[in-house]
Length: 325
Image (tube, rainbow, N blue to C red):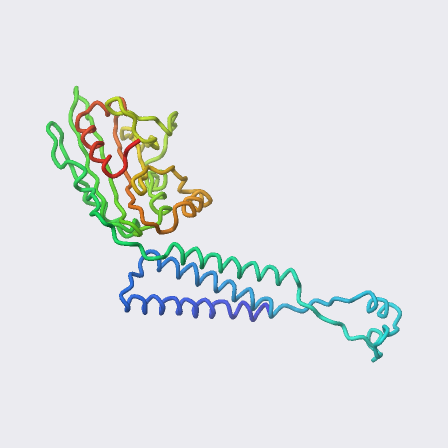
């Protein structure tokens, strides 16, 4: 039975993935956008269904457990048939009844119930998202392309991550100048997701904590990871603050926010599966809110950055997408 189960597993996996691919192909042919939700939903559904079928096959191929009542046990011990039975020379003439393990049945039922719950969640969060009533603000328009006294550079290589991030609306501009013989530099990065374009948990994992170490920047000791920033005397939404160092480069101060449906939402550790699951269950795998990810990076502390008029102009632009207290 075990050998047969092992032999059936890859055949079942290939067959179920064929069903998934065929379903997605038919949906695409019907004009349905299959990237994003439907791609992930069919993948998880097929995974759960395949596991449930394998569990069922394991139950069917399992040896039956023998369960004897007291009378049968006494007859086996004495060699005499129990009342109302005929002897046939084997264990006092009694056939041994067999029953399927109740524990196995309960485990299988729990698996089916879990699969049904997952299907319900995907069906609920996969409902069609109504088109937005207003045009979103293009991130490219939020960041000035020129500024007096500043050299402005626009990053052109960030679009290589568009496929992973599931958006092409992203921009990063760096502003630099020489002040008192020292380079004063800061960068602003903004990415936008339309309603239903990406789950909140995906955007929440798009943080320097997850991305920067892979590029050679490593976190440094930080006494204030959640600073209460102010600009021109007014508070900003609670920011996430990090300090990164790479080789002999100047340490970079990093502040970032995740805006969902016009409000900054709490940060979640991108390496914590329970934290991201909590975020997904709270906000949904796909919901109607627009999302922005905003990051400001500088070689100066916030106290030196905030008095700059250019910084005030950019923050004012970002208040229109939800960077408000």
